Length: 225
Image (cartoon, rainbow, N blue to C red; front, side, top):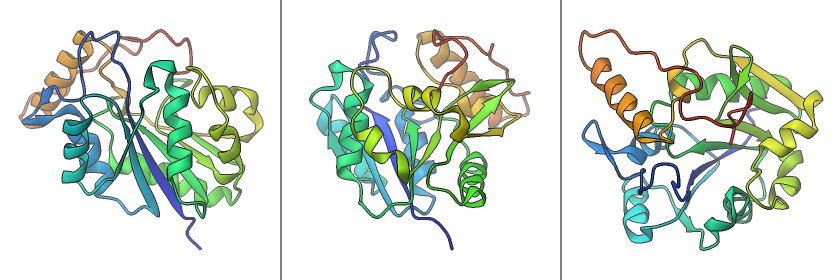
């Protein structure tokens, strides 16, 4: 029996390191966020929601183009936990698990998503937390079994799902992923330029560039949300 998985797209960040709204920056002919929306929309979910910030109307319209409903986070400046709590309160109560996507990871691949959901299916436990890893480091997207829903709904501040992962190491199941590109995000302008190069190379005969693992990062060993 296939578990009922819900999808959350976190797209309400303040982009303080970028200094501008990054999710609407043009990337290979469409807004950066649209790349994530397109991949998520192309897969089957029991429920799906995008948590958005400003500009509310423009972000909601973009999500609507991919038939993804939105919820606006007016408290986004209080930290990422506010978006997670909103998502938990917006999703169906009948889900077996929830996977969290970051809106600024435009190179996310369906193959990686299928690997994560497949591993959750194999785990056959609603206490499993499925995390992609590369070279010993954890990344997003992360899939939480339904057991963790109350804990996710009770988060506060800017800790996100990392707090639950660190407090429950015995429940974490790692999925090693050799390709680093699905984990590239747009924290800084240099990150954004690298993403442009990656997508340009993907559509040409150029070799895909590799980004240093720690570019734009300041979270230590765990790069999850």
